[in-house]
Length: 180
Image (cartoon, rainbow, N blue to C red; front, top):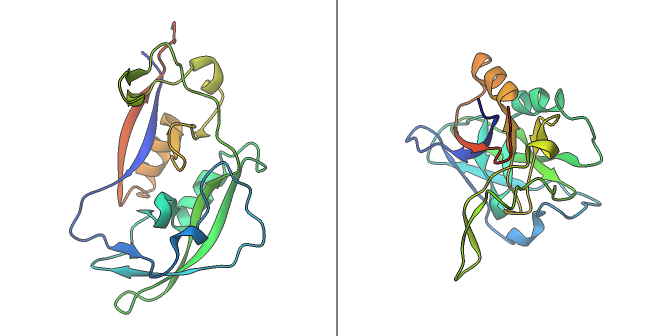
């Protein structure tokens, strides 16, 4: 069977709230840029409950303390990934610390030969990962999107087992050059 990785995508649910940042979204980092002198921002949770994952300001993935701890167990090189704290405030559910998942650089893991592009715009319709570059990885991002968070099947299984998948849809991404 072809190896599968999963990209996080926010789950559409009426119970799960939205993060609202009122101010300059440029304060939030994009993947591929090193972050220095991080000032912990405050974001409002509105229209629902806390989840373990949110699509945060500037498109940054935002995870709960519990999900951060699980993901950290699978990080092999902390020079590539940071978990930047943010304050989330909610009048209804109380205040919590969450974390932006920030990659200091974009990883070269796309299998160009199996990725489907729209030739007129250069946009990607379907991305495929290069098996040789991801076979020993559990957490990756790509240069396709500045802020994507992609995990292995192993992490997804642990997340579901520990019920850390609230707020998350898992979109499968396959390895295009796998020759199992």
